[in-house]
Every structure is written in structure tokens, then in C-alpha cells.
Image (tube, rainbow, N blue to C red):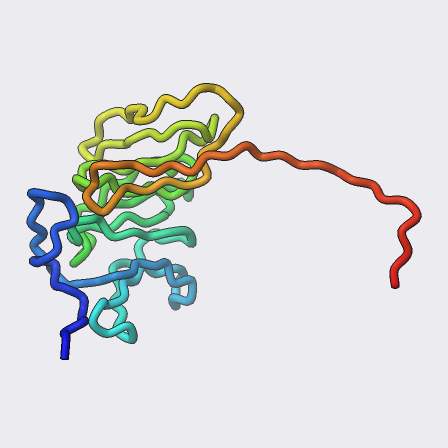
Length: 183
């Protein structure tokens, strides 16, 4: 019988040339709003979907959480000392040495090399920007024309070489019908 279990982190490089050193293997990160003192960042195991582990409850807030491509770090929505929304990045095992960044628009997404977070420009919704984790200034990644289309979603290919971007134009109408009778 063929073994259909998920391959281990050692056998499935997420980015060519990058060799992850798995701490634990998790498939899902989440914000659990039911913590005794407020939201908790939790991760769920790949091997046992019933097994979850708390990463941190410090300043977590409802929103999103995502594990880095190398499986060593996590980013999640949080609050700063002034209760303003931020993104927090820390190591997945203990959440030591957390770094915080302003929450710019939607939840940030890891770039394939784990060195930055990408996000949609909240002012225009039309370009993707990258915030380096070393504290450098954000840089614009895409340069779409000002054509009225917004970015609805984006993600990298499994090999980290291509970026897929879903763009669309929002339209709305108000339609008035007269003389209709319900059956």
C-alpha cells in the first residue's frame, strides 16, 4: 500500500535552496477569540488535527495569523501599547523577540524568502508593497496602471518564482422595478 502521508519538511523545500529546520510541523495558524483573557494565537498540527498549541496571548487581536514558508516564524494581528492595530512577527516555538509593524490595510503575507511581508496598499488598493522584517522602509513591488481596478487577492507559486494577483473593478447599480407582483 502506498504511503500517502504528507511528506516531512525536510523532503519538501518550499523555496529552492532553502532547507527548513522544522521545530514542529504545523499546517494552520489561527486567532482563537475564546481565550480566558482575550484572543490567543494558536497553531494546529499537521499530524494530529485535534492537537493545537498556544503560541502567545500577548496583545493578540482578532484577525489573521500565518506561518512563514520555512515554518520557523509566525505573523499575526495584534495591538500596540496605544491599542492600535499592528502586525507582530515572532519565532513560532516561543514567540520570543517579537517585532511589530503598523497594520497597513489587510493582513500581511510572507514573501517566499521569509525576509518580508507583502500587503496591498491601503490607500489605493491597486499595488502590492513589501515591508522588510529588518525594519527597512517598505518598497513597492507591483506598478499597475491607475485603471480603477483593485487587488482582491494575491499569492506566490509553490516555487516562489511567480506572483498571482486577482484584480477587478467594483461596480454597483441600483435598479428599481415597477409593476411586479409576487406569486
